Image (cartoon, rainbow, N blue to C red; front, top):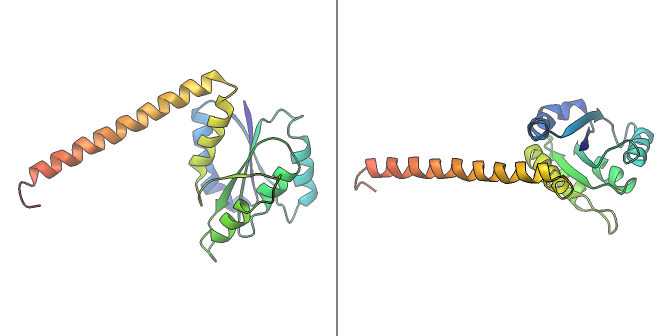
Length: 168
């Protein structure tokens, strides 16, 4: 289980780091790199073209502003690519989101929400879980734990409301 987490700039790392934690918690091997679709296009081409031969099974591309990185990577490989739009100061990440999600036919990029690194990592886990039963079981347990946390929050809220009496 090997995933590449590629970001267009090292300034994206504070967001990417959240996804890395998720992947590591699930036991997925992750390689992190800075490769720019615009400043190092030949490196992006080489990386994506050789990703499968280098043992990667999925690529997550994180980029802001014009955010062409996930699309360039997807155009150069048959591996699944997940696009992670990064919020920039100019357009609050909408530019990146639209750049990633509006791919031409034949070059799909699964896209998560702006700064949604955790969801990008979880989607990677779900995709890999088709092949790896251990990931599928860990993801099922993750969902159970998530539901249990919500149940506790619901219980606590209802107790708080009961404590307020009839003032509502």
